[in-house]
Structures are given as C-alpha cells and as structure tokens.
Image (cartoon, rainbow, N blue to C red; front, top):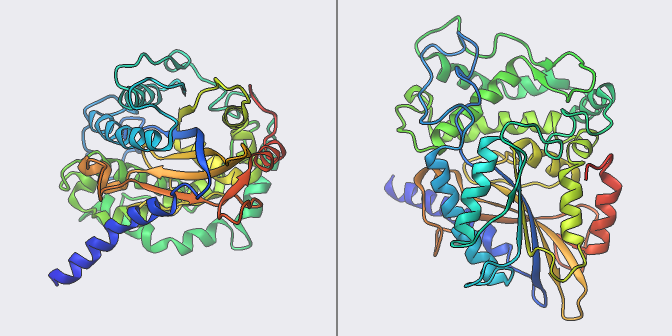
Length: 413
C-alpha cells in the first residue's frame, strides 16, 4: 500500500514539473514582454452567511477577514508565487535582478484584487515603488465588468441563445444528469447525518430568467452547487484544518471532483464567444495594446488583477484550456493567471504564446516554497488558428493582433 501511495505522490508532484518543462522558451527565441491577467488570491465567501438558510445542516466555518477580502494565508501564497514569477522573469530577461524594471499593474476595485496586486507586486519587485492603477475601493470599474456596467452593447437574448447553442441538445438538464454523482456528494457534505431540508439538489437546474442587459446566469442545483464547490475549495486552499473543510466531511479528492461544477458553470455562461467577447472588451483591449505597443520603453511586464470570471472570459475568447493539479479542467485557480508572452527571434520578428501559470491547490494550502522540484504549474495553451516556426502554441504577433481584433467587440479603452 505504501509503495502505491508513494507512486501516486510522485506522479502528482511531477504533473506541475512536466507542465513547467513543456513551457520552456523555444530555441532561437527570447521573451521580451509579458502581459498577464491574474485572478486574485484566496478569499472567504463574498457574503455572510454564504448560502441561504437551510443549505447546510451546520454553521459555516469562520474566516479571519471580511467577506470577499484577501486572507492572510492567501497573501502569503501570493508572495511565494511572486517569488517564483520573479525568478522566471529574471531568467527570461524581462526583469533585472537588481533594478525595478518597467512594469504596469492595474487592479479591479475590490479589496481582494487591489490587495492581490499590492502583495504580488511588492514581492515581485522588493524595494521598488509601485504605481498600482485602480478605482477607489468598491467603485465599479467598467474595464473589469463592462457588461454589468453597461459599457459595451449587450443583447441578453442573443447571449442566452449563444449559451443554449453551446450546451447542445441535452441542455442544462443533461449536464445535471451527467454531474448527478458530484451533486449528490455535495449534498452529503452539506447535510451530514441530516437527510432532508438541506442541500442544493432540490431545485432543477435552469438558466435564470432573462434580464435586459444582464449576463446569463444559472439557477437551481448547478448554480448553488458551483458556489458550494468554490467555498469548499477556498476553505481547503486557505489551509483550514480538515475538520473545518466541509465540516470534516470533504476530502481533497471531493474538492477536485466538485471543482468541475465551478468549471461547468463558467463553460456554460462565461466562455461562449458572444459573452466572452463582450466581457473581455476592456481587459482584452488593454492586453492587446500592451503586447503590441511598439515603444522601446513600453512596460516589459503588465499585470491585470481581476477575477475568475475574467479568466473564464479570456479562456473562452481564445479557446484556451488548462488543468491545475487539484482542480478541474479550466477552473480558474486562486492566483492563477493567463500570460501572453511576446517572443522575438534574432531578426526581431515577434511572436506570441499563451501560458497558464498557477500554484497547485496543495502548494497554496501548504504554502510550499516554489523552487527546485516544487515548481508551479506552467503550461502552454495552443491558440486555435495560430502556428509559427513549427512550434506548438506559437502565433506571429500579426496573427495574434488580427485574432484579437476580430473577436473583441465594443472595446472599452
């Protein structure tokens, strides 16, 4: 039994290393710019109590900060991540070992996104004065939420049609049937010994009623279970004792499986092209401008500190896919980021590739120093429709610019 467990541990540990190795810079190229969209670090649920009364049989665990704020543990994990990013950027030549380099950091206006930008930036460039651009806390920023703020033309009926078209003939009911074992396990974690009057599966899954100008949203079992899955993941990621993670009834394997509920919610309502193109109208325009800026003194590193919805929109816009160990495929991890690397050859011709970079879930939970064998997950994501120099996942800069211009609409500058 011990040898089987040891082999499994080695296999799991090697997943991040293998992804990191395949993300090595291709021969004959060097990185000259990085533009990244990063999800904030670990937070509590955004409201208290996090779910309607009766969802859980027992009281929800306490957190050390206000709802939705970056936790101290989350900040510590970000510092470790920034140290790994610093080493990678120095190795790539986009950040100097001794100077402050040239960088631009933009954050959404929530406390967790501002604090993530500050924590990450300070650890990335210790001793440097950082100018982090953001609106006053809690003043909505249309760059990060253009649909909600009415900053981009948006037809809710057309968005709903795009969602239903992407789901396919089985519909949302088919997704619920497919995920029934995971949903039942969520109910068991929520309810414990209680057998009725709790859980999330009593209401069938549907799309929420159409609301003019509003993003499509799920309702019913899949919607509520996705929220619970994310809460359990955040409890685990924050390093809570296992007796507090899902009231002691959730395992790491449960959290990995339940993560699919969160990823499926994004696949259904955030990744369809119509929604993604409009949700990314602000962030996408900034990223495209930053990667293409012809000025020699343009920032070598640009970081936008946002949310999982932003990450899901960008993944849907370019059909990007990843899987961080401990989470389901395409589920945005706390502190995880989509990076666009700009690469140059010896003749100065420019290319772009997309990378997903993240700590594994256990690296976040255990505050694992990232170095040596303990590398973060770092995987190249092929951009559909692009190929260059016979290298997987590589676009010419011109092709990347064309793709972004074609797919982004109603751009918010």
